[in-house]
Image 1 (cartoon, rainbow, N blue to C red):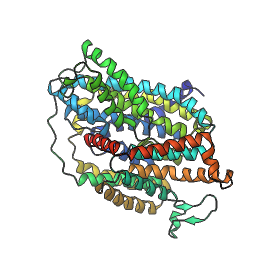
Image 2: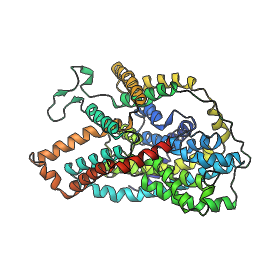
Image 3: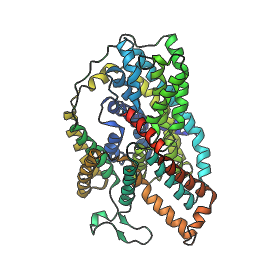
Image 4: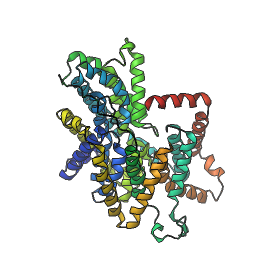
Length: 497
């Protein structure tokens, strides 16, 4: 199979419709602060169970990178980022809007995101194949080490307390152990509840902690009045604007493509890194923060590129780089497809269909965003109190539809309360979800590695690839415990907030 075979499948009416819906919904949730792609994908996860695997992942992917587009609209027009990755865009985007250049800022953001999306798609196409071929050499020991590195990387790049992030990963690993032991067939951690024989419902937990929990948390916050929306006088940039934006777009695409692959990195770190780079390279750094077009072009390119290249570790290695990728990996598992190197051999058509759909999706997002800027802005004024009852109903119906079990709806409510409590206590639920997804695979590969090594753990450490990966995980843990680095990390995420 090749890219052109995937393009033909992506252009089929059903997949094309799924791509359009994903891009449209992604823009919608990006415009509305407080919803976000994580909660939205969690809510729509059960719906994808009734779609083909290709249509399901195409739609979920469209929601993710579409949210990066939508988040820039409110960041520029009303100085409120629709997404965390668009926080940086507020600094110069809103200042441009105040100077009557809102349309130019929006157009540059759309153009930069489109170019970065094309570049990131090419990176995925060229990098994924050799990376997957390299991963074919992995045995159980290497997979165990790789997943350990992925979990440690999520801790290192998570916001907030390291101890809390480690605790959340541990909780996620424990939740993944509930159910029937694959090797012995014995029940474990199910408290003699028959409905837990097959384990906890991934969809119920995801929608509970991200959907219900985040909604209750948002309702508990004081919502400020809507800012004055900047007027859009001129939409298209002139030659000077394009010339000033060309290099930042190129650099942002590269920065985002690289950082997007890192566990926990993705769009947020990419946008901040791009802004810092553009300010450092600029001949007039004093202009940043007062309406520099480079401060919009670079970060907007970087966050979209980072969002798309975060698919690389999930598709080729089976390691979700962030909570969104963990949800998409869970969506694949609902269809009986395990993310990892085998996708390129056993599901090559699906892989190339996803890649091709990214090209189509980025084109659709340009068409959706620029002509309908005014419409998206009006959505920001929609009261959240109208949205949340609809979201709760969708979560309940969606959870029930997966296994047709009322018990799963109870699990949804329970983890909704737990998710709300975790948010109030400043615990991140993202690492818990990563632990839940990777936990069963981590255990399975560790037990296989121990069987092959006849119970000797030294044989796992002695293998070159697994030893290198485990050493990298250990180094990351040691580095994050350094006092100076911890202070720097806290400062960075304090600025993000």
